[in-house]
Image 1 (cartoon, rainbow, N blue to C red):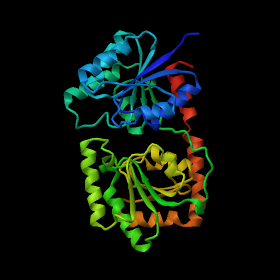
Image 2 (image 1 turned 90 degrees about the vertical axis):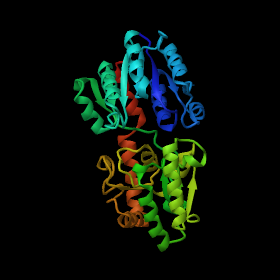
Image 3 (image 1 turned 135 degrees about the horizontal axis):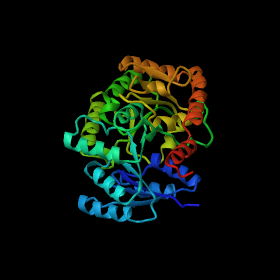
Amino acid sequence: MKKYETLVLGLEHFIDKIGYQALSYQYYNHSIKYLVSDASGFSMYFARKYVADVSIVPKNPLKRMFFTVKYIFKNRYTHVEIYHTGHLTFFYVVICKIMMKDILFILRGCEFDKRNSSFWHALFVRALQLSNKIIAKEPFLYNEAKKLVSPDRILFLPNAIRAYSEDILDYIDRDIDILFLNSPRKMRNLFLLVDSLNLIVKKNKNLKIFLVGFSILSEKGNMIEHEYQQDVLNYIKQKGLEKALKIKSFVDNPYDYHSRSKVFVLPSDFIFLNYSMLESMSCGTVPVVTKGDGWEWIINNENGFVSDFDPVQFAEQIFNALNRENWMQKSVRARETVKTNYDIRSWGEKILVFKGVI
């Protein structure tokens, strides 16, 4: 039997959501090597956590290019999975074609951003067309890719996670009432969230509210994120909420927060299968989201609450979710939704069949 091995290029870091995929590959005994730039600074921690084969690429672009090409030239790698890694993407695809690697291009979000220059966008499109197969993780990516390549070369495969498997806490045992756990970015509308939480705190000062993921507190992340996060922190201070809201940095144990929380909030422009939301729901935590793109793929009347982009309505829905009777009904359904539809083991089987290795 032919032995297949995969090399993964273009990842900014190795964290839980990639670790889930590594576990799935391990389950099917498919060897895989990850080259990551480690933007978070936590990649090797997570590599050990998931017993994954991870190497950090040099920060210098020229050194990174030679470092990566060395791995591409190794004959043992039969397949290469490529995430859009900026200006080097087209170069890597060409080298992989020369070396007769089977290329799987993975689309995950901003690849078709119209703000990219026409020259670099053209190179990205050509890289996509040169790839053997394409994974689209979101519906609009699948539709965009179909305009460029034959549909039989594309697989729509959304996010999946390893569902929480520890004891599920009852409502009374959860010591966090409201949880935001994501990287605070402009598209996640933290100002709207703070306005909603301000209304909530005025009605009930005893609620325990956590906002987790502020990379600025650990000097991780990029300058644009830090500027936005500082503006949010200033706004929290302006509203007099410093004591009411517990602000935390990036955490490497998200389930410790998800499993203890009653309500998970995500007032984002884009909801579609947010990893942190899936993790929280798998703990039985009830989601409250805005009507951002893709919300209807996972949230319904049985497993969560949906709001317009309005702080008053969003606050009302949070209060609805905190109602014990409502919570008891939605919590079970939230967990079932993830375990039934977004399990990482099923994800692994689908991608490996698509790649033709099982």
